[in-house]
Image (cartoon, rainbow, N blue to C red; front, side, top):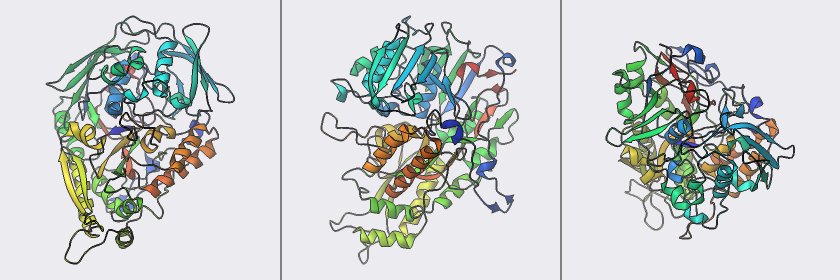
Length: 574
Protein backbone atom coordinates (compact mmCIF):
# COMPACT_ATOMS: atom_id res chain seq x y z
CA UNK A 1 0.00 0.00 0.00
CA UNK A 2 1.16 3.49 -0.78
CA UNK A 3 1.84 6.12 1.84
CA UNK A 4 -0.59 9.03 2.06
CA UNK A 5 -0.27 12.11 4.20
CA UNK A 6 -3.83 13.34 4.43
CA UNK A 7 -5.93 13.23 7.53
CA UNK A 8 -3.56 -2.70 -1.64
CA UNK A 9 -6.73 -5.19 -0.66
CA UNK A 10 -8.89 -8.32 -1.65
CA UNK A 11 -8.35 -11.76 -3.02
CA UNK A 12 -7.16 -13.94 -5.82
CA UNK A 13 -8.51 -13.56 -9.33
CA UNK A 14 -11.26 -16.02 -8.52
CA UNK A 15 -12.06 -14.48 -5.19
CA UNK A 16 -12.20 -10.75 -5.84
CA UNK A 17 -15.81 -10.51 -6.96
CA UNK A 18 -17.10 -12.54 -4.03
CA UNK A 19 -15.19 -10.38 -1.59
CA UNK A 20 -17.17 -7.28 -2.55
CA UNK A 21 -20.62 -6.43 -1.37
CA UNK A 22 -20.87 -7.23 2.32
CA UNK A 23 -20.76 -4.17 4.56
CA UNK A 24 -20.57 -3.59 8.26
CA UNK A 25 -22.75 -1.00 9.91
CA UNK A 26 -21.03 1.67 11.94
CA UNK A 27 -21.72 4.68 14.05
CA UNK A 28 -24.69 5.37 16.21
CA UNK A 29 -27.10 8.20 16.79
CA UNK A 30 -26.19 11.83 17.46
CA UNK A 31 -28.02 15.01 18.28
CA UNK A 32 -28.92 15.58 14.66
CA UNK A 33 -30.49 12.17 14.23
CA UNK A 34 -29.21 8.76 13.26
CA UNK A 35 -25.66 8.82 11.98
CA UNK A 36 -24.94 7.45 8.52
CA UNK A 37 -23.51 3.93 8.53
CA UNK A 38 -20.64 2.49 6.53
CA UNK A 39 -23.15 0.28 4.73
CA UNK A 40 -24.94 3.38 3.38
CA UNK A 41 -21.89 4.74 1.57
CA UNK A 42 -21.31 3.84 -2.13
CA UNK A 43 -18.15 2.29 -3.54
CA UNK A 44 -17.41 4.93 -6.23
CA UNK A 45 -18.34 8.57 -6.94
CA UNK A 46 -16.58 9.95 -10.05
CA UNK A 47 -19.31 11.61 -12.16
CA UNK A 48 -19.02 8.69 -14.56
CA UNK A 49 -19.58 9.95 -18.12
CA UNK A 50 -19.31 8.39 -21.58
CA UNK A 51 -16.37 9.65 -23.64
CA UNK A 52 -18.77 10.86 -26.35
CA UNK A 53 -20.21 13.38 -23.91
CA UNK A 54 -16.83 14.82 -22.95
CA UNK A 55 -15.35 17.69 -24.93
CA UNK A 56 -11.83 17.51 -26.34
CA UNK A 57 -9.16 19.70 -24.79
CA UNK A 58 -8.69 21.65 -21.62
CA UNK A 59 -6.53 21.32 -18.54
CA UNK A 60 -7.30 19.64 -15.24
CA UNK A 61 -5.58 21.32 -12.30
CA UNK A 62 -5.20 18.58 -9.70
CA UNK A 63 -4.25 19.59 -6.16
CA UNK A 64 -1.89 17.31 -4.20
CA UNK A 65 -0.21 17.73 -0.84
CA UNK A 66 3.46 17.09 -1.59
CA UNK A 67 6.06 17.61 -4.29
CA UNK A 68 7.71 14.18 -4.68
CA UNK A 69 11.26 13.72 -5.86
CA UNK A 70 11.45 9.97 -6.61
CA UNK A 71 9.17 8.67 -9.40
CA UNK A 72 10.37 5.09 -9.51
CA UNK A 73 7.45 3.54 -7.66
CA UNK A 74 9.56 0.50 -6.78
CA UNK A 75 12.24 2.58 -5.05
CA UNK A 76 11.84 2.80 -1.28
CA UNK A 77 11.41 6.60 -1.54
CA UNK A 78 8.87 6.26 -4.36
CA UNK A 79 6.27 4.42 -2.29
CA UNK A 80 3.89 7.38 -2.19
CA UNK A 81 0.28 7.57 -3.33
CA UNK A 82 0.96 10.81 -5.20
CA UNK A 83 3.86 9.21 -7.07
CA UNK A 84 1.53 6.42 -8.18
CA UNK A 85 -1.11 8.94 -9.32
CA UNK A 86 1.37 10.87 -11.44
CA UNK A 87 3.24 7.84 -12.79
CA UNK A 88 0.01 6.07 -13.77
CA UNK A 89 -0.81 8.87 -16.20
CA UNK A 90 2.40 8.48 -18.22
CA UNK A 91 3.69 4.94 -17.64
CA UNK A 92 2.41 1.46 -18.61
CA UNK A 93 -0.19 -0.14 -16.31
CA UNK A 94 -0.81 -3.68 -17.63
CA UNK A 95 -3.82 -4.24 -15.36
CA UNK A 96 -6.80 -2.09 -14.37
CA UNK A 97 -9.61 -2.66 -11.86
CA UNK A 98 -13.30 -1.80 -11.94
CA UNK A 99 -15.36 -0.51 -9.03
CA UNK A 100 -16.01 -4.07 -7.83
CA UNK A 101 -12.29 -4.78 -7.71
CA UNK A 102 -12.33 -7.12 -10.72
CA UNK A 103 -9.18 -6.92 -12.84
CA UNK A 104 -8.83 -6.93 -16.62
CA UNK A 105 -5.92 -6.46 -19.03
CA UNK A 106 -5.29 -2.82 -19.90
CA UNK A 107 -5.44 -3.51 -23.63
CA UNK A 108 -3.16 -0.69 -24.87
CA UNK A 109 -0.38 -2.64 -23.15
CA UNK A 110 -1.64 -6.16 -22.58
CA UNK A 111 -3.91 -8.11 -24.93
CA UNK A 112 -4.23 -11.25 -22.82
CA UNK A 113 -3.11 -12.63 -19.47
CA UNK A 114 -3.99 -15.99 -18.03
CA UNK A 115 -2.79 -18.28 -15.29
CA UNK A 116 -2.49 -22.06 -15.49
CA UNK A 117 -4.80 -24.23 -13.42
CA UNK A 118 -2.03 -25.06 -10.95
CA UNK A 119 -1.03 -21.39 -10.72
CA UNK A 120 2.58 -22.09 -11.68
CA UNK A 121 2.55 -20.46 -15.11
CA UNK A 122 1.29 -17.00 -16.03
CA UNK A 123 1.14 -16.26 -19.73
CA UNK A 124 1.19 -12.71 -21.11
CA UNK A 125 0.48 -11.55 -24.65
CA UNK A 126 1.53 -7.93 -25.16
CA UNK A 127 0.08 -5.33 -27.50
CA UNK A 128 2.67 -4.99 -30.32
CA UNK A 129 1.61 -1.37 -30.88
CA UNK A 130 2.92 -0.34 -27.46
CA UNK A 131 6.15 1.58 -27.47
CA UNK A 132 8.25 3.80 -25.23
CA UNK A 133 8.54 7.52 -25.88
CA UNK A 134 12.06 6.97 -27.25
CA UNK A 135 10.59 4.81 -30.01
CA UNK A 136 11.64 1.43 -28.59
CA UNK A 137 8.93 -1.25 -28.53
CA UNK A 138 7.67 -2.48 -25.16
CA UNK A 139 8.64 -6.14 -25.20
CA UNK A 140 9.03 -9.14 -22.95
CA UNK A 141 12.55 -7.95 -22.13
CA UNK A 142 11.17 -4.99 -20.16
CA UNK A 143 9.05 -7.33 -18.06
CA UNK A 144 11.96 -9.75 -17.64
CA UNK A 145 14.26 -6.97 -16.44
CA UNK A 146 11.75 -5.72 -13.89
CA UNK A 147 11.01 -9.24 -12.65
CA UNK A 148 14.70 -10.03 -12.21
CA UNK A 149 15.44 -6.81 -10.34
CA UNK A 150 12.42 -6.83 -8.04
CA UNK A 151 12.86 -10.52 -7.24
CA UNK A 152 16.32 -9.74 -5.88
CA UNK A 153 17.92 -11.96 -8.52
CA UNK A 154 20.74 -9.66 -9.58
CA UNK A 155 24.30 -10.14 -8.34
CA UNK A 156 24.43 -6.51 -7.16
CA UNK A 157 20.97 -6.71 -5.58
CA UNK A 158 22.01 -4.81 -2.44
CA UNK A 159 22.74 -1.70 -4.52
CA UNK A 160 19.09 -1.42 -5.56
CA UNK A 161 17.00 0.50 -3.02
CA UNK A 162 13.89 -1.60 -3.52
CA UNK A 163 10.82 -0.90 -1.44
CA UNK A 164 8.98 -4.19 -1.89
CA UNK A 165 9.71 -7.56 -3.51
CA UNK A 166 6.33 -9.15 -2.70
CA UNK A 167 5.22 -11.53 -5.43
CA UNK A 168 8.36 -11.08 -7.48
CA UNK A 169 10.36 -13.36 -5.20
CA UNK A 170 8.00 -16.17 -6.28
CA UNK A 171 9.06 -15.87 -9.93
CA UNK A 172 11.44 -18.67 -10.93
CA UNK A 173 12.14 -17.43 -14.45
CA UNK A 174 10.72 -15.47 -17.38
CA UNK A 175 10.47 -17.45 -20.61
CA UNK A 176 10.14 -15.79 -24.01
CA UNK A 177 7.16 -16.91 -26.07
CA UNK A 178 6.56 -17.18 -29.82
CA UNK A 179 7.89 -13.66 -30.37
CA UNK A 180 9.08 -10.65 -28.39
CA UNK A 181 5.48 -9.81 -27.44
CA UNK A 182 4.75 -13.01 -25.55
CA UNK A 183 6.26 -14.46 -22.41
CA UNK A 184 5.47 -16.76 -19.50
CA UNK A 185 6.30 -16.38 -15.84
CA UNK A 186 7.26 -19.73 -14.36
CA UNK A 187 6.49 -19.53 -10.64
CA UNK A 188 8.14 -21.29 -7.71
CA UNK A 189 4.68 -21.54 -6.11
CA UNK A 190 1.20 -20.34 -6.97
CA UNK A 191 0.51 -16.63 -6.55
CA UNK A 192 -3.18 -15.85 -6.34
CA UNK A 193 -2.58 -12.09 -6.54
CA UNK A 194 -0.52 -12.21 -9.73
CA UNK A 195 -2.32 -9.22 -11.34
CA UNK A 196 -0.38 -7.06 -8.81
CA UNK A 197 2.86 -7.76 -10.68
CA UNK A 198 4.12 -4.92 -12.91
CA UNK A 199 1.76 -2.37 -11.33
CA UNK A 200 3.81 0.26 -13.18
CA UNK A 201 6.28 -0.93 -15.81
CA UNK A 202 9.63 0.79 -16.33
CA UNK A 203 12.03 0.40 -19.30
CA UNK A 204 14.62 -2.34 -18.95
CA UNK A 205 17.48 0.19 -18.89
CA UNK A 206 16.19 1.54 -15.59
CA UNK A 207 15.92 -1.91 -14.05
CA UNK A 208 19.19 -3.45 -15.25
CA UNK A 209 21.49 -0.88 -13.65
CA UNK A 210 21.29 0.09 -9.95
CA UNK A 211 22.36 3.68 -10.62
CA UNK A 212 19.58 4.10 -13.19
CA UNK A 213 17.11 2.38 -10.84
CA UNK A 214 17.99 4.67 -7.94
CA UNK A 215 18.47 7.93 -9.84
CA UNK A 216 16.94 7.64 -13.32
CA UNK A 217 13.42 8.66 -12.33
CA UNK A 218 14.48 11.10 -9.63
CA UNK A 219 12.57 14.33 -10.42
CA UNK A 220 12.38 13.09 -13.99
CA UNK A 221 10.45 10.89 -16.40
CA UNK A 222 13.18 10.24 -18.99
CA UNK A 223 11.04 7.65 -20.81
CA UNK A 224 7.23 7.37 -20.76
CA UNK A 225 4.50 5.36 -22.48
CA UNK A 226 1.00 6.51 -21.68
CA UNK A 227 -1.90 8.73 -22.74
CA UNK A 228 0.10 11.60 -21.28
CA UNK A 229 3.84 12.28 -21.45
CA UNK A 230 6.32 15.12 -21.93
CA UNK A 231 6.49 15.65 -18.17
CA UNK A 232 7.49 19.11 -16.94
CA UNK A 233 8.71 19.92 -13.43
CA UNK A 234 8.55 23.44 -12.02
CA UNK A 235 10.51 23.53 -8.77
CA UNK A 236 9.49 27.12 -8.07
CA UNK A 237 5.74 26.59 -8.40
CA UNK A 238 6.12 22.95 -7.28
CA UNK A 239 4.01 21.61 -10.14
CA UNK A 240 4.26 18.53 -12.32
CA UNK A 241 2.62 18.86 -15.74
CA UNK A 242 1.79 15.88 -17.95
CA UNK A 243 0.81 16.69 -21.53
CA UNK A 244 -1.36 14.74 -23.96
CA UNK A 245 0.78 12.33 -25.93
CA UNK A 246 0.39 12.47 -29.70
CA UNK A 247 2.21 9.14 -29.92
CA UNK A 248 -0.30 7.30 -27.72
CA UNK A 249 -1.81 4.38 -29.61
CA UNK A 250 -4.88 3.90 -27.43
CA UNK A 251 -8.02 6.00 -27.03
CA UNK A 252 -6.72 9.59 -27.13
CA UNK A 253 -6.73 11.58 -23.92
CA UNK A 254 -9.65 13.98 -23.70
CA UNK A 255 -7.58 16.58 -21.84
CA UNK A 256 -4.65 18.53 -23.24
CA UNK A 257 -2.84 18.36 -19.93
CA UNK A 258 -3.04 17.61 -16.24
CA UNK A 259 -1.15 19.85 -13.84
CA UNK A 260 -0.43 18.42 -10.39
CA UNK A 261 -0.16 21.39 -8.02
CA UNK A 262 1.63 20.82 -4.73
CA UNK A 263 0.30 22.80 -1.77
CA UNK A 264 0.45 22.43 1.96
CA UNK A 265 -2.62 20.60 3.24
CA UNK A 266 -3.90 23.65 5.05
CA UNK A 267 -3.74 25.72 1.85
CA UNK A 268 -5.61 23.39 -0.52
CA UNK A 269 -9.14 24.39 0.48
CA UNK A 270 -8.46 28.09 -0.05
CA UNK A 271 -6.78 27.45 -3.39
CA UNK A 272 -9.73 25.35 -4.50
CA UNK A 273 -12.23 27.92 -3.25
CA UNK A 274 -10.41 30.52 -5.38
CA UNK A 275 -10.79 28.27 -8.45
CA UNK A 276 -7.02 27.87 -8.82
CA UNK A 277 -7.37 24.07 -8.87
CA UNK A 278 -10.25 21.91 -10.10
CA UNK A 279 -10.15 19.05 -7.63
CA UNK A 280 -8.32 17.59 -4.67
CA UNK A 281 -8.74 15.17 -1.81
CA UNK A 282 -10.72 17.19 0.75
CA UNK A 283 -10.59 14.61 3.50
CA UNK A 284 -12.05 15.40 6.88
CA UNK A 285 -10.93 18.84 7.99
CA UNK A 286 -14.15 20.37 9.40
CA UNK A 287 -13.29 23.97 8.53
CA UNK A 288 -12.46 23.06 4.93
CA UNK A 289 -15.61 20.99 4.61
CA UNK A 290 -17.72 23.86 5.94
CA UNK A 291 -16.04 26.29 3.53
CA UNK A 292 -16.63 24.15 0.43
CA UNK A 293 -19.80 22.13 1.00
CA UNK A 294 -22.04 24.80 -0.58
CA UNK A 295 -19.56 26.18 -3.13
CA UNK A 296 -21.30 26.99 -6.41
CA UNK A 297 -20.26 24.79 -9.33
CA UNK A 298 -18.62 22.29 -7.00
CA UNK A 299 -19.51 19.01 -5.38
CA UNK A 300 -18.07 16.83 -2.64
CA UNK A 301 -17.84 13.15 -3.46
CA UNK A 302 -18.97 10.42 -1.10
CA UNK A 303 -17.61 6.89 -1.36
CA UNK A 304 -15.65 4.31 0.61
CA UNK A 305 -12.01 5.14 -0.01
CA UNK A 306 -9.42 2.40 -0.54
CA UNK A 307 -7.44 3.66 2.42
CA UNK A 308 -7.38 3.86 6.19
CA UNK A 309 -5.85 6.21 8.71
CA UNK A 310 -3.70 4.71 11.41
CA UNK A 311 -1.44 5.38 14.36
CA UNK A 312 1.92 3.73 13.97
CA UNK A 313 4.85 3.02 16.27
CA UNK A 314 8.51 2.42 15.48
CA UNK A 315 9.16 -1.06 16.87
CA UNK A 316 12.64 -1.41 15.44
CA UNK A 317 15.55 -3.02 17.26
CA UNK A 318 17.00 -0.69 19.88
CA UNK A 319 14.09 1.73 19.59
CA UNK A 320 12.14 3.09 22.53
CA UNK A 321 9.08 1.04 21.57
CA UNK A 322 10.84 -2.17 20.64
CA UNK A 323 8.89 -4.11 23.30
CA UNK A 324 5.55 -5.23 21.93
CA UNK A 325 4.07 -5.10 25.46
CA UNK A 326 4.82 -1.37 25.58
CA UNK A 327 3.19 -0.79 22.20
CA UNK A 328 0.14 -2.78 23.33
CA UNK A 329 -0.07 -0.67 26.47
CA UNK A 330 0.04 2.57 24.50
CA UNK A 331 -2.89 1.45 22.37
CA UNK A 332 -4.92 0.78 25.52
CA UNK A 333 -3.91 4.24 26.75
CA UNK A 334 -5.33 6.08 23.71
CA UNK A 335 -9.04 6.43 22.96
CA UNK A 336 -9.24 5.73 19.21
CA UNK A 337 -12.98 6.46 19.13
CA UNK A 338 -12.33 9.93 20.54
CA UNK A 339 -9.67 10.48 17.90
CA UNK A 340 -12.07 9.42 15.14
CA UNK A 341 -14.90 11.58 16.51
CA UNK A 342 -12.64 14.61 16.84
CA UNK A 343 -11.44 14.16 13.27
CA UNK A 344 -14.62 13.10 11.46
CA UNK A 345 -17.34 14.81 13.46
CA UNK A 346 -17.48 17.91 11.27
CA UNK A 347 -17.73 16.32 7.82
CA UNK A 348 -21.05 14.44 7.88
CA UNK A 349 -19.32 11.07 7.92
CA UNK A 350 -19.69 8.13 10.25
CA UNK A 351 -17.35 8.37 13.22
CA UNK A 352 -17.25 4.57 13.58
CA UNK A 353 -13.56 3.74 14.25
CA UNK A 354 -13.97 0.18 12.97
CA UNK A 355 -11.33 -0.54 10.36
CA UNK A 356 -9.57 -3.59 9.02
CA UNK A 357 -6.07 -3.24 7.63
CA UNK A 358 -6.64 -5.75 4.84
CA UNK A 359 -10.33 -5.46 3.96
CA UNK A 360 -12.58 -2.50 3.27
CA UNK A 361 -16.15 -2.33 4.55
CA UNK A 362 -17.36 -2.95 0.96
CA UNK A 363 -15.67 -6.36 0.95
CA UNK A 364 -16.98 -9.67 2.20
CA UNK A 365 -15.17 -10.78 5.32
CA UNK A 366 -14.70 -7.26 6.70
CA UNK A 367 -14.81 -7.33 10.49
CA UNK A 368 -13.29 -5.85 13.63
CA UNK A 369 -10.39 -7.95 14.96
CA UNK A 370 -9.34 -5.61 17.77
CA UNK A 371 -10.86 -7.39 20.81
CA UNK A 372 -8.40 -7.47 23.69
CA UNK A 373 -5.98 -5.07 22.00
CA UNK A 374 -7.88 -2.03 20.74
CA UNK A 375 -10.02 -1.06 23.76
CA UNK A 376 -9.36 2.16 25.62
CA UNK A 377 -8.39 1.03 29.12
CA UNK A 378 -5.88 3.33 30.84
CA UNK A 379 -5.85 1.25 34.03
CA UNK A 380 -4.85 -1.85 32.07
CA UNK A 381 -2.31 0.21 30.13
CA UNK A 382 -0.64 1.38 33.35
CA UNK A 383 -0.44 -2.17 34.68
CA UNK A 384 1.11 -3.40 31.43
CA UNK A 385 3.77 -0.68 31.53
CA UNK A 386 4.64 -1.58 35.11
CA UNK A 387 5.03 -5.23 34.11
CA UNK A 388 7.20 -4.21 31.15
CA UNK A 389 9.61 -2.42 33.48
CA UNK A 390 8.49 1.15 32.85
CA UNK A 391 7.60 2.37 36.33
CA UNK A 392 6.83 5.71 37.94
CA UNK A 393 9.19 6.85 40.66
CA UNK A 394 7.91 9.05 43.44
CA UNK A 395 7.99 12.69 42.45
CA UNK A 396 8.33 11.96 38.69
CA UNK A 397 5.73 12.71 36.02
CA UNK A 398 7.09 10.33 33.38
CA UNK A 399 7.87 6.64 33.67
CA UNK A 400 11.45 5.38 33.51
CA UNK A 401 13.11 1.98 33.13
CA UNK A 402 15.89 0.46 35.18
CA UNK A 403 18.48 2.34 33.12
CA UNK A 404 16.83 5.66 33.91
CA UNK A 405 15.52 6.19 30.36
CA UNK A 406 12.29 8.20 30.17
CA UNK A 407 9.27 6.85 28.30
CA UNK A 408 8.81 10.02 26.25
CA UNK A 409 7.73 9.54 22.65
CA UNK A 410 9.08 11.51 19.70
CA UNK A 411 5.70 12.00 17.98
CA UNK A 412 6.45 13.36 14.51
CA UNK A 413 3.80 15.20 12.47
CA UNK A 414 3.80 17.20 9.20
CA UNK A 415 3.57 20.91 9.96
CA UNK A 416 0.58 21.71 7.75
CA UNK A 417 -2.09 19.26 8.93
CA UNK A 418 -4.28 20.50 11.76
CA UNK A 419 -6.02 17.13 12.11
CA UNK A 420 -2.68 15.41 12.59
CA UNK A 421 -1.72 17.98 15.21
CA UNK A 422 -5.06 17.42 16.95
CA UNK A 423 -4.48 13.67 16.99
CA UNK A 424 -1.06 14.15 18.54
CA UNK A 425 -2.46 16.50 21.19
CA UNK A 426 -5.24 14.03 22.08
CA UNK A 427 -2.68 11.24 22.41
CA UNK A 428 -0.37 13.44 24.46
CA UNK A 429 -3.16 14.33 26.88
CA UNK A 430 -4.37 10.76 27.28
CA UNK A 431 -0.91 9.23 27.59
CA UNK A 432 -0.07 11.77 30.29
CA UNK A 433 -2.74 10.06 32.41
CA UNK A 434 -0.62 6.90 32.40
CA UNK A 435 2.59 8.90 32.84
CA UNK A 436 3.92 8.53 29.31
CA UNK A 437 5.50 11.66 27.86
CA UNK A 438 5.00 12.92 24.31
CA UNK A 439 7.17 15.45 22.50
CA UNK A 440 5.31 16.62 19.39
CA UNK A 441 7.84 17.27 16.65
CA UNK A 442 6.31 19.28 13.79
CA UNK A 443 8.43 18.90 10.65
CA UNK A 444 8.23 20.30 7.10
CA UNK A 445 5.62 18.63 4.91
CA UNK A 446 7.98 17.47 2.15
CA UNK A 447 10.46 15.92 4.60
CA UNK A 448 7.91 14.14 6.83
CA UNK A 449 8.33 10.78 5.09
CA UNK A 450 11.75 11.06 3.48
CA UNK A 451 13.68 12.35 6.51
CA UNK A 452 11.64 11.04 9.42
CA UNK A 453 9.21 8.16 8.83
CA UNK A 454 11.05 6.18 6.12
CA UNK A 455 14.47 6.24 7.85
CA UNK A 456 12.81 5.54 11.23
CA UNK A 457 13.50 8.85 12.94
CA UNK A 458 10.31 8.74 15.01
CA UNK A 459 8.61 6.85 17.82
CA UNK A 460 4.98 7.48 16.89
CA UNK A 461 2.97 9.23 14.20
CA UNK A 462 -0.29 9.06 12.24
CA UNK A 463 -0.81 8.90 8.49
CA UNK A 464 -2.78 7.08 5.79
CA UNK A 465 -2.08 3.85 3.93
CA UNK A 466 -3.61 4.03 0.46
CA UNK A 467 -4.47 0.95 -1.61
CA UNK A 468 -3.76 1.01 -5.34
CA UNK A 469 -5.41 -2.36 -5.96
CA UNK A 470 -8.22 -4.41 -4.39
CA UNK A 471 -5.80 -7.07 -3.12
CA UNK A 472 -5.05 -7.67 0.56
CA UNK A 473 -1.62 -9.04 -0.30
CA UNK A 474 -0.70 -5.56 -1.48
CA UNK A 475 -0.27 -4.78 2.22
CA UNK A 476 2.51 -7.32 2.71
CA UNK A 477 5.11 -4.67 1.96
CA UNK A 478 3.91 -2.65 4.97
CA UNK A 479 4.05 -5.47 7.51
CA UNK A 480 6.55 -8.18 6.55
CA UNK A 481 10.31 -8.54 6.84
CA UNK A 482 13.15 -8.24 7.26
CA UNK A 483 14.12 -8.89 3.64
CA UNK A 484 17.80 -9.68 3.97
CA UNK A 485 20.56 -7.22 4.80
CA UNK A 486 21.95 -4.12 3.14
CA UNK A 487 25.61 -3.52 2.25
CA UNK A 488 26.30 -2.52 5.86
CA UNK A 489 24.77 -5.71 7.25
CA UNK A 490 21.66 -3.97 8.59
CA UNK A 491 18.22 -5.57 8.16
CA UNK A 492 16.27 -4.38 5.14
CA UNK A 493 12.65 -3.53 5.96
CA UNK A 494 11.70 -1.95 2.64
CA UNK A 495 8.28 -0.30 2.95
CA UNK A 496 7.62 -1.74 6.42
CA UNK A 497 8.00 1.49 8.37
CA UNK A 498 7.27 -0.10 11.74
CA UNK A 499 10.62 -1.94 11.36
CA UNK A 500 9.30 -5.07 13.05
CA UNK A 501 7.33 -8.19 12.19
CA UNK A 502 6.93 -11.85 13.14
CA UNK A 503 7.30 -15.22 11.45
CA UNK A 504 3.53 -15.64 11.79
CA UNK A 505 2.80 -12.43 9.90
CA UNK A 506 5.31 -13.28 7.18
CA UNK A 507 3.87 -16.78 6.82
CA UNK A 508 0.32 -15.42 6.87
CA UNK A 509 0.95 -13.24 3.83
CA UNK A 510 2.64 -16.16 2.04
CA UNK A 511 -0.47 -18.25 2.62
CA UNK A 512 -2.78 -15.39 1.67
CA UNK A 513 -1.32 -14.71 -1.76
CA UNK A 514 -1.38 -18.40 -2.63
CA UNK A 515 -5.04 -18.89 -1.65
CA UNK A 516 -7.70 -18.99 -4.39
CA UNK A 517 -10.79 -19.89 -2.37
CA UNK A 518 -12.58 -16.63 -1.46
CA UNK A 519 -13.84 -17.75 1.95
CA UNK A 520 -10.45 -19.10 3.01
CA UNK A 521 -8.82 -15.96 1.62
CA UNK A 522 -10.99 -13.71 3.79
CA UNK A 523 -10.33 -15.97 6.79
CA UNK A 524 -6.56 -15.67 6.34
CA UNK A 525 -6.83 -11.90 5.84
CA UNK A 526 -8.62 -11.59 9.18
CA UNK A 527 -6.08 -13.86 10.88
CA UNK A 528 -3.31 -11.54 9.67
CA UNK A 529 -5.22 -8.46 10.81
CA UNK A 530 -5.56 -10.06 14.25
CA UNK A 531 -1.80 -10.73 14.39
CA UNK A 532 -1.18 -7.08 13.48
CA UNK A 533 -3.38 -6.05 16.40
CA UNK A 534 -1.32 -8.31 18.65
CA UNK A 535 1.84 -6.50 17.51
CA UNK A 536 0.24 -3.01 17.59
CA UNK A 537 1.31 -2.38 14.00
CA UNK A 538 -0.39 0.45 12.06
CA UNK A 539 -3.23 0.65 14.58
CA UNK A 540 -6.37 1.67 12.60
CA UNK A 541 -8.19 4.86 13.53
CA UNK A 542 -10.85 4.78 10.81
CA UNK A 543 -11.50 4.07 7.14
CA UNK A 544 -10.61 7.19 5.22
CA UNK A 545 -13.64 8.99 3.73
CA UNK A 546 -13.74 9.25 -0.05
CA UNK A 547 -14.45 12.97 0.08
CA UNK A 548 -12.99 14.89 -2.85
CA UNK A 549 -13.83 18.48 -3.70
CA UNK A 550 -14.27 18.62 -7.47
CA UNK A 551 -15.62 20.94 -10.15
CA UNK A 552 -19.06 19.56 -11.04
CA UNK A 553 -18.22 19.75 -14.77
CA UNK A 554 -15.24 17.44 -14.45
CA UNK A 555 -16.04 13.87 -15.50
CA UNK A 556 -14.55 10.49 -14.57
CA UNK A 557 -12.53 11.72 -11.60
CA UNK A 558 -13.12 11.76 -7.87
CA UNK A 559 -13.58 8.99 -5.33
CA UNK A 560 -12.47 5.84 -7.19
CA UNK A 561 -12.63 3.39 -4.31
CA UNK A 562 -11.21 0.09 -5.55
CA UNK A 563 -11.27 1.07 -9.23
CA UNK A 564 -8.42 2.38 -11.37
CA UNK A 565 -8.33 5.94 -12.68
CA UNK A 566 -8.66 5.89 -16.48
CA UNK A 567 -6.67 9.00 -17.31
CA UNK A 568 -7.61 9.21 -20.98
CA UNK A 569 -11.30 9.41 -20.00
CA UNK A 570 -10.97 12.36 -17.59
CA UNK A 571 -12.36 15.53 -19.11
CA UNK A 572 -14.82 18.40 -19.13
CA UNK A 573 -18.51 18.06 -19.92
CA UNK A 574 -18.79 21.74 -20.87
